[in-house]
Image (cartoon, rainbow, N blue to C red):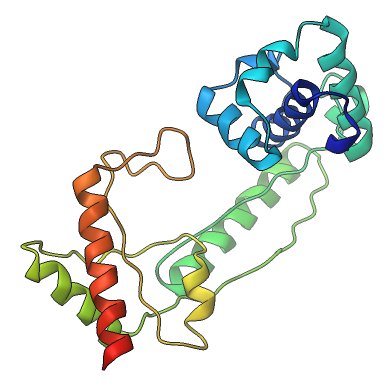
Length: 217
């Protein structure tokens, strides 16, 4: 769909609208005014100049026509429509360190939803989409990373993560460890994500040292 647009500004604007409606649940009134980091990232994928996005709304009907095309292609409905108000889909991403805790959380959630549906005379359908077991990383590899950090005057902290990292899948086949670089807010996968250069360099040095040691031993 993106490649069918004429001009880099239209391809970039169309792609931005594809992303914003998926993540925000709505089309922006001024799609060219997304954060600069967002425009730059999408432009990098399309290999176009991010600056051309300012031309996307020069012709006012264009972005509205594109929004309508996206809506039809993916079956998105405006919530003001009566048919959309009669049907609601929701997704719960539940995470916990222990399987027992996760089981309790999901069971409690399902019971609460069923009770709310009963009180309001609604029908509800619940279905589990996927589930990933907890993963423990290789102790020897983790110890090597810790030793590298301590050799550089840093005291590592063991941090659990509930995110679905690729390393969790790889751990079933090969020794795996993860090295997290701290950031001030903990924000991830966002334009606001940031980390100090010194912290990044400390992580790179530790990783490089471990790789060199493993490769040469």
